[in-house]
Length: 89
Image (cartoon, rainbow, N blue to C red; front, side, top):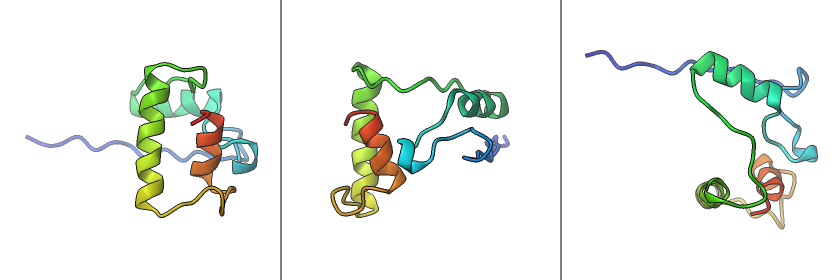
């Protein structure tokens, strides 16, 4: 049985598909729509107000920061730091 390979999607700040790190990083509605069309997934908008998705994202992103040795107080311009600020982690 062959495994199905996910398509890679090129998202660009210039085309308005993702936000620059200075504006909080993350995908825009246009970027989410493009990614969903290309991969068949169902990405949703961020949930900074609270809930299960916020809790899950904050836990996953904390693991990414630990894995890559990122300290947001020293390097606040990193995309992961901007995204965590946007999600209010």
